[in-house]
Amino acid sequence: MQIYRCSSAWIDGEVRDKVDITVDETGRIASIESWGAVSQAKVVLLPGVVLPGFANAHSHAFHRALRGRTHGDGGTFWTWRERMYEVANVLDPDLYFRLARAVFSEMALAGVTSVGEFHYVHHAPDGSAYDDPNAMGEALRHAAREAGIRLTLLDTCYLTGGLSDGGHTQLQPRQRRFGDGDGNRWAARFGLLAGDGSTNIGAAIHSVRAVPRDQIPIVVHAAAGRPLHVHLSEQRAENEACEATYGQSPTQVLSEAGALGPLTTAVHATHLSDADIGLLGGTRTSSCFCPTTERDLADGIGPARELALAGSPLCLGSDQHAVIDLLEEARALEMHERLHHHERGRLQPTELIAAMATHGQASLGWPDAGRIEIGQRADFVAVRADTVRTAGSDRSQIVLSAFASDVDTVVVDGAIVVSGGRHRSQDVEAELVSVIGEVWDRVRSSS
Image 1: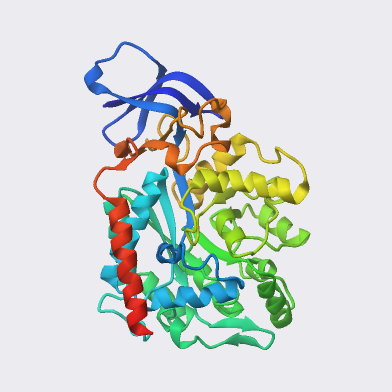
Image 2: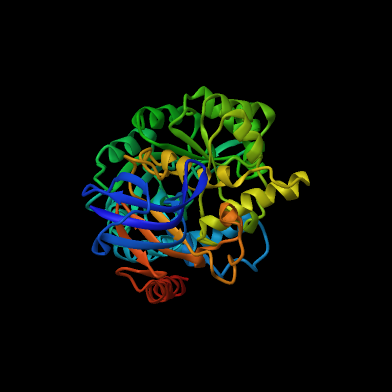
């Protein structure tokens, strides 16, 4: 047994002071009690406000290499995507592992205890399979394990190069490594993956751009009982092409293919009609917003509150990792609402913490995480309340003043992964400098 002594902790939607949380040998919460007389040898002090572990519900780990290199380029999502292909083209299983380990360790420093990796870099650059057809996915599994966080590997079906008014286009040469040919071949490779104690296997439909309508049911069938994620209506151009090809919105295409439901998460959900919102909410499909990416790529502001009111649980992701800071993503969700609707307090701190933790963990297939509650996984994020950013904050509003740099201690399944703002095993800054430098050396050599 291990006792975590909290000055303050977020429990049952409010801050409780002077709480002892006992964790059993399996890494689950055994009891929650007021401070009492205990052996100091068994006590770990957690400073500030202790929140449940954060879930990063949407990640493309290799996009982290683009941070600080594309933000001033101008253009749109589509021009940014060309730079992304350059990075994807130089990855192999070893480099992918080292890059992902550094990125997942950066997430741990920010309080992330589970990550959903939307994984589509499956094969060699020419599209041929590695000896292990899931070598790239296995690299991600090992990276998360060494970083000390849980992984939901969202193995992504990606079949076509895009969608235009004339229909789907073939994969371009730089996209070949993403594709499996058709849905059945994707499903065969997907079927080889197996989860473990710290890894869930889920699936993803990249988008209606990349998976034709007649192939979507194959993915839905293969993913039955597992998390299923999909990029949805991130750009208006996607909606326009889908309407031109199918006479329906992307949400309607997914609905008719049976892809919506409580195990499904729609990522971005930016440009939706009222009917789309009704479909997502009515099926209890989750909506994952990535505000720092959506603003960086000039995608737009999605209808977060409208989706929540319709019945769609909200969760959060850092997507392209222009920022890895779930506290900032949560704050941005509310701030974008304010900018769009000219009204403050549209999403309360309780709702923001649920998006960061409870709903996000559930969207990744970890429903036993995301709450500080007896029987739940012992995931804790201690956010300091005495930094230059948080000093003087009402502790119930810490989510609106704190940043990732204010995270002091992170506990995952009862084990300390971050203490005093430092990772237990990784020199994260040095690893990021080294591996991102190697990525760009390879890009330059290949051009």
